Length: 206
Image (cartoon, rainbow, N blue to C red; front, side, top):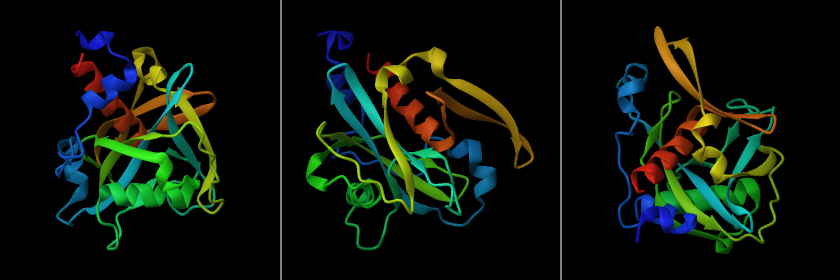
């Protein structure tokens, strides 16, 4: 069967890395930011790329950080954070952080794959865990970290007209920042780059 004829949910499952094929460093963007990272080992983190099946199609769960945070205040992000010593894996860390930040119980989240690792200028190697979230979930954000949760249709990210690139000077040379403006919000930086990674995998799988 032609991949384009498959339901989008099945296309996503086929496009991402399986749970038996976890990604490893370096991240796919390592060459772009290697000059900013130096020789200090990267800290490990995980985020949840949570996909919700709605009657109108698939959507992706995102959070908006509170304005009081010392880092990434007000930014749009996936649920996630540093992998702690007690976390058995990146999957365990992503599930724990999703429950802590957004209040979604672990049994409502079914991980099924990964995107490739992504490195951040703040010194993290991030493993994106792709999972299906039960459509009946109720978000209960931790107000210390999360101001709001919302969903964006996956189809929005698949339309190339919605991706913008903004060139800035950072670390002594020009660099491109990715942005997906949506509904008065600006999804940019690492979150936009990881979403683009998912889009590129879906394109390559068709």
